[in-house]
Length: 439
Image 1: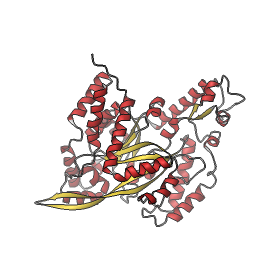
Image 2: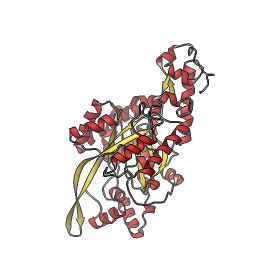
Image 3: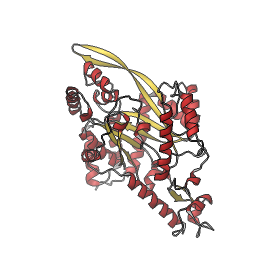
Image 4: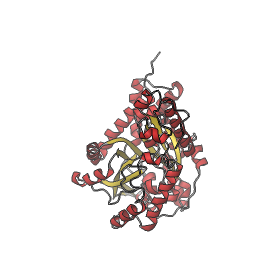
């Protein structure tokens, strides 16, 4: 009997490393960025892959299950001007997160939101004709579903075959005239529809100091955007701060009747810094502050008003810049903890009477799940790479449709909050403080 030893966490680790190597070969500046991130403290990475059909979403959910990654959240990006809705595939248990946090944000194109009916039909036909998974990777997915595990050799083969879905394809499947029409509707639509496969749109390392990274990038030959999106620099980081940069120019050869046409396009990369997770009250507080900044100053992609935007952001956050994550606890702004080694070794939590005091006395600290749920992609208007578009799609959320084609129910925000409360109680149980007050 064949011994199946490859755990999903091991397969995820193998696959994410292989993807990093592949992406570094495709985008040499990514290697430069990784070196710089290592200099200023960096950790996990995540990717984005944009899908075109319901079948693609269904199959990629099965593929990610082999990697121990579940769909978490539903995001309607029509509010950000894009005809897509999405989820994020990620590990969800504490042990899996400690092993490898790699996750992938996965938008699905909503062809039904393309306004031109003829163009909609043409796009649907192009997408229906492509096959984005190899026959062998789907066979291995079937083996995993039947056996609930793979052998070590099968896991290695799975990683190689799965990479083909994420590899960049420069050969277009659409004629140039069709590409131009799709591009006129929205570049995002053209990028999803016009090529043989979805590929990894970008692979993003996470830094612990995005300001230092931004300052160091020009010296490595990489020019970031002038404005770091999200809250300004704080003594204790929370939520998401991000920026992007032009990774390279690419020339694409399209078919056009009996001739070929060459068109240029730019590939972009991203960097992100994620801080501690917020409870519902804290998240609402920060969302209101960020919204006030955007109302006062338009975030110009060219960076012409960068100084005005940063000044407005500092003014909006001036009263909370020095609030540490520990101080968020008694205010009800943060809620995700785990027991420290000192707390687990202690038979009693000293004189502490509240969770706040436990954290202050180092018996309890923020869980690694905090950074997982902190702000990865939960605000389409700020985290979507197409957020600067001027296309006006009315918000048309359709979670039921998305989960039907996904073939699974994605974890909800309320489920995440319940899990945070469970982690908090688990931490208190570990240090013998089951009856302690929250604040």
